Length: 321
Image 1 (tube, rainbow, N blue to C red):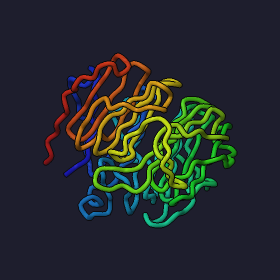
Image 2: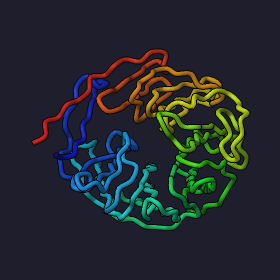
Image 3: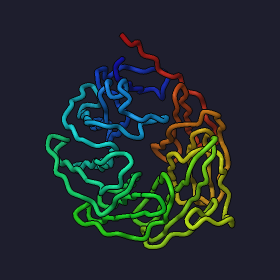
Image 4: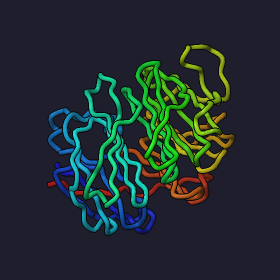
């Protein structure tokens, strides 16, 4: 078994293999058409059960590798290795970040920021004033970023507005489980929070901020911490917390494992199912407000009209040796 990276230049109709090797890519991000990075783990870590997998990799014991390309994926270089269980990219032109949590899965520890200004050839490392079991990051501009950590009902949120030179803690809505953070600019953002999950369901809530996280407003779902029954907006208890994106101040999308794709047109207050999939979906991404994709194992959906309609994209296939 090997890992692969494939590329399409015609909207997914055809795919070309760019990378094949003993590292399994689990995250991929490009800052432009030429420069990108992939987070990858050795195949043996999956075979030995050292990587916990649920749709995407949630945690791996052992070293992570950073594959880098500067020619649109024609060549990939294994340039950096770090001992991190969880790692998330936040790339920008001339200033690439990897935020990591470097302790065992059941331990809350500070997050660390790895930075490179030379396409990954060298890295510096600093500790962030955030810790927890789960990690989320949002970096809408090169200068503005938020890092969120949760440990039970305790949450911490740090923000920078000077490209990571300084960080300060701001107000953080608390949650009992995974959190997804998304900002569209230096002021407006959302947090999707979840509690304990079971039998295909998970209590969830959405908060919004218009002042960079100084204050948060409860938008949808049942308040989790402290638990209470009143709700604002609508958000199904079905499905598990997954990725969330907003393409404008009003238009948002989230994918929930064990449920499917949900859409909001009122800034995150009400959420309507757009595509129900019993196995759930893994990720949603938009290149611009019109063009986006939803993916899961064996399924790719695409839209060119802001989600008014979605079409199935042919799923690429590869031959393992």
